[in-house]
Length: 133
Ligand SMILES: [Zn+2]
Ligand SMILES: [Zn+2]
Image 1: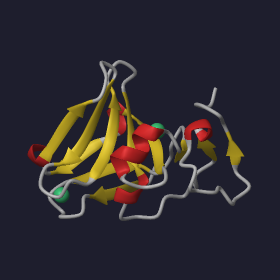
Image 2: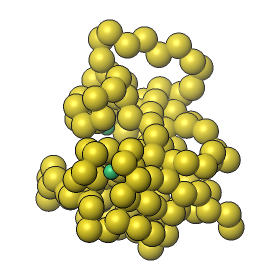
Image 3: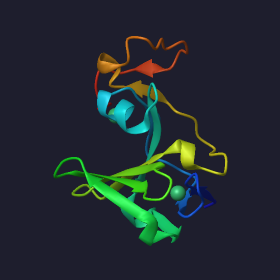
Image 4: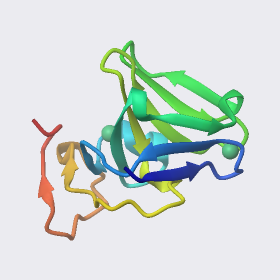
């Protein structure tokens, strides 16, 4: 299987993931909006065993959002890297950190029920009020 590499804005952190994701989509929830500073977060799920930090592990800070979710970011440049689902053993990486082009494309919009009122979704992708089932 081929892999994709990614990095933060300052380059301190580098990651590597398989080029095959169980889910890839755009999350419009208010928390992703805050955390990314954007209308929505384009993200993809990776099994924890497939997620590699190839450089700069020590540059990653985490914010414990909930008991289940840690948010990882670069402590030097502030780039949002991933949310880690602690009990489910998953990482949800932010697609903006990828330096390679993934084969897949976002398949859906999720948490559309709480999307930014100033942002209009203008593509034909499937929309979910909350998470996909
Ligand atoms: Zn950085
Ligand atoms: Zn979200």
